[in-house]
Length: 305
View (cartoon, rainbow, N blue to C red):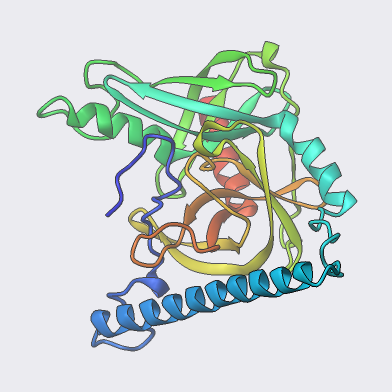
């Protein structure tokens, strides 16, 4: 199992979704033939890598041959494909409302991302970012209950970094471990641009999306992909949830950041990735649907201000 880097892991990178777990026998299969399933995935993965390696080698040989003949390959001047203009506009619209989140509690620390949702400067992030710091602090003090944030450091100390580089304290308004959502609040001086939330039921499979956040502490990073599936059943923590599946790269530190469509509307909150044998991202990420996020956030804000 990989070791945590303390950079706000989005459920890992060792998180394995139920349908990819080598110990999972598949729907209706009670045998749980984990070893056979694991070997089958390894064979598929190795075959794919072999094909990729062969393609690279063949391309290199072909390029060398053409260069040796003094000819120019027709593909030599091809430029990398660029994001369509609407996605560029969406990124410009969203980044000003996204922050880096650092949570410290006693000797524990975790980082991730978050984003503004209203003019009162409420922020959405993942609960597991706050929980990681609290649990790490509790583990440093024997007898301290994990997740309480009371082990020598009181309540977790939360700091956010704004898009213009300012460091500001944030208040934890409330948390909901079941949905993996936490609501923070910063001072009005933050002047963060609230993100627009997508309308319920508007997200479609195949539409382009951007994952925005601070992977590995790199603030304001944008990665692109599509909505791969909706209503995907995955296990988040101890609970099973519906999730938006995407192939937009999600890395440690993206947790709590927004997944947005081409109109700059938030369709989900990035929270997890799937792996095979814990070997890192394979292009399968999961986001909490915005309908659930909005419902939980409204309840938390209504209770906590």
